[in-house]
Image 1 (cartoon, rainbow, N blue to C red):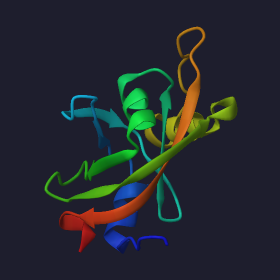
Image 2: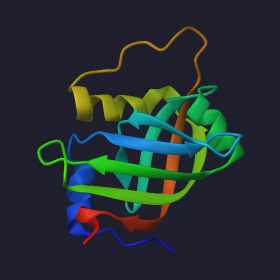
Image 3: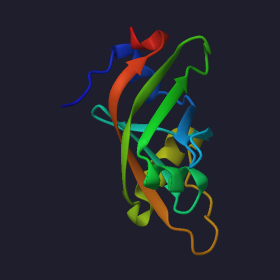
Amino acid sequence: MPYPLSDATVRLLAGRNYAVLATVNPDGSPQTSVVWVGRDGTDLLFSTVAGRVKHRNMVRDPRVSVTVIDSADPENYVELRGRVTMSPDVGRRLDTRLSWKYDGRDPGPDRPGAVRVAVRMTVEKVTGYAAR
């Protein structure tokens, strides 16, 4: 069942606000990465390259947390917790969409042989100032 997102959360996700993805390392310690995020309904979307630490962590343990910070007011933020599923980012469609949102242009090239992965996060809990 979709978790409802407040209007303030939807505005943060729609803006050019960077997010911090937290995944779980094999030893249980946290690993964080700054990511660009998009939205499909109540799901969060982001792209990564297969084999990166965050990708390996999400393959092993799909539980993640994403904190989105308002670039105009850093005290306005939202943390979304949930689980991810991954599929090929065919034609880098998601990566390109996010690049246009954040940079206003097509993304630069990945390293040779890189495989792009589209990540879909199903939100299970929302906290933070913008969650209200």
